[in-house]
Length: 100
Image 1 (tube, one colour):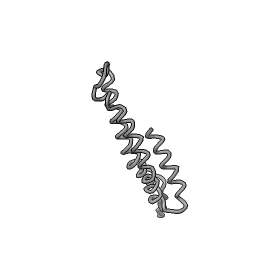
Image 2: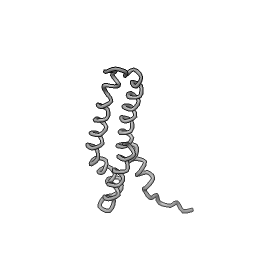
Image 3: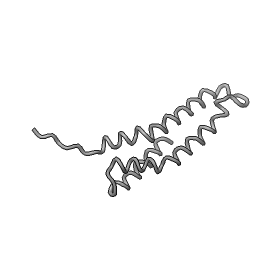
Image 4: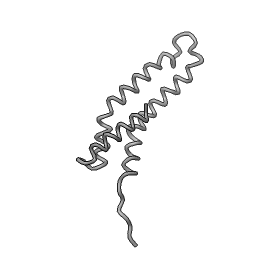
């Protein structure tokens, strides 16, 4: 899920590159994708919530898995919306060459 979200943010940023400077286009693309990314993450987290709480029969075995998936989704969302755009701008921005 996180990889697909990053790909969609970067694809939208590339579409906007011609009209705006690169940092602004990445921020705008991340802002546009914020709601779908949060909705997907929250739906998955709330889906795993009964298992993580331990509601139902046989949840004691799968409870650690649910908790780790929920944490991974939350961390992946933060990295998708903050870390990935910062790294994208840093790696794709052309730096002036230093001459001797």
